[in-house]
Length: 77
Image 1 (cartoon, rainbow, N blue to C red):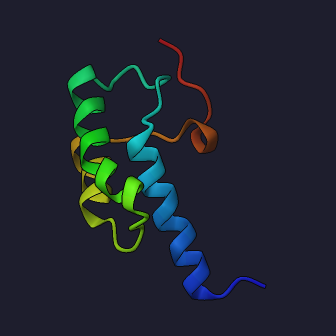
Image 2: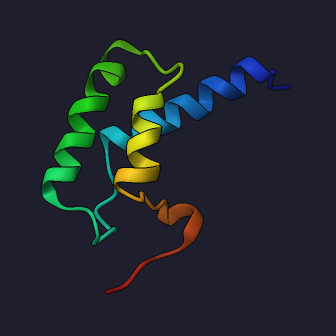
Image 3: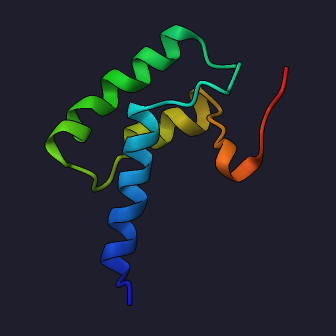
């Protein structure tokens, strides 16, 4: 059974992973935005720091309007 701590770690890992490997299927993201997201998340990804990735969540929510195709479905232009 998953504990709340485990769930938080999984969600943090998912946020960092989505930042380190931003989706290529979102046509709204520019190459600059992808590079910025990857560079911000690279430290966390390489050092296994997945707790409280607030800076990535802010970028994903407000700056990039980040989509998750695995949840929202495919976006075709």
